[in-house]
Length: 199
Ligand SMILES: [Fe+2]
Image (tube, rainbow, N blue to C red; front, side):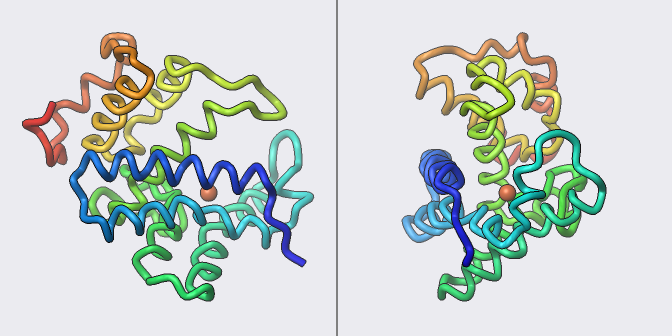
């Protein structure tokens, strides 16, 4: 029997809610917003089909163990299609570990080749993972999480990343001091900034 871990379920729920907030800021249609919600909710559902000993293994994974874990977006995709959800939701899920700079998996898609929903999930998935407590570390505060994300800034859609920082600042009633995050200001001249006037 496949078992869904309660923590994964809660993570999916938080990512779904964060993603709705970001999608709302983009003025997406209600249909697209509800699609993104469902993509967030189910993005890691395929982890239930992984070898749980590998999934929960503490410490460093071997290459073959990593390859095994990296199959979860495909398992999630397949499961969501089996449940009868539309293909656009399944594709957001399949590509939620793709990186803006092409270094992600499963396909190494780049920039706007990655569906919008998947680009949103990518940011929210990482942010949530950093800001909850893990067995091996305490939860990070906003500035600590943004510092880590700043180092990987090229993996995120720059427009969405800027919207995300604004959203986090509003939600936590704080201000994000751009100079604290060395790469954040640099993305302002990214050629892919499709809401340039907003920033
Ligand atoms: Fe995932």
